[in-house]
Amino acid sequence: MPVLDAYVALGSNLDDPRAQVERGFAALAALPRTRLRARSHLYRTPPWGVLEQPDFINAAAWLATELPARGLLRALLALEVRAGRVRGRRNGPRVLDLDLLVYGDAVVDEPGLVLPHPRLHARAFVLLPLADVAPGLVVPGQGCVAGLLARVDAEGCVRLD
Image (tube, rainbow, N blue to C red; front, top):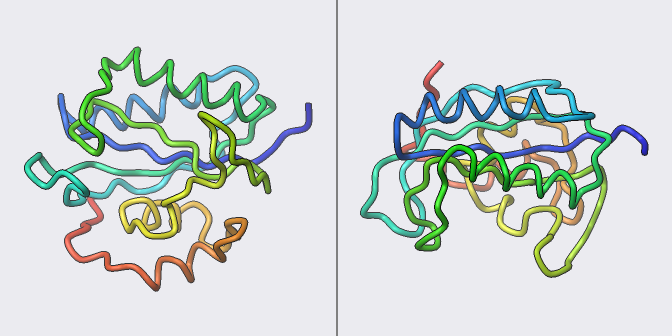
């Protein structure tokens, strides 16, 4: 299997969110046949969707991986479970959220796997950290990360480090 670039969003707003995201980076770096190429700054961002919850800590990782897209997704879901994530209310609070944003130049729309992530182009809490690691990345069907970021409202998003 060739080595492909993959981009993952990390987020948490429960159980010491900053530490959860840091542990998330470490877990990504430890994935088999995968290397953490770069990590973003951390951002404190307001909740999205369900507003009555704590702010999030968000970040992004750039991976080089030999794992197939579904294999990488399965690994991300397993890391969430290991961190203590229990899926409940959509857009609700979570211990750790790991979203596969972009996998090479793949465009996939299958049950359980949509690439690129269908809402990344509209979310400042994803685009801000993604721009740290890959501002020139062209998201298939959406455009360049830096251009996408220029079109979203990032009010309330604060870089922490």
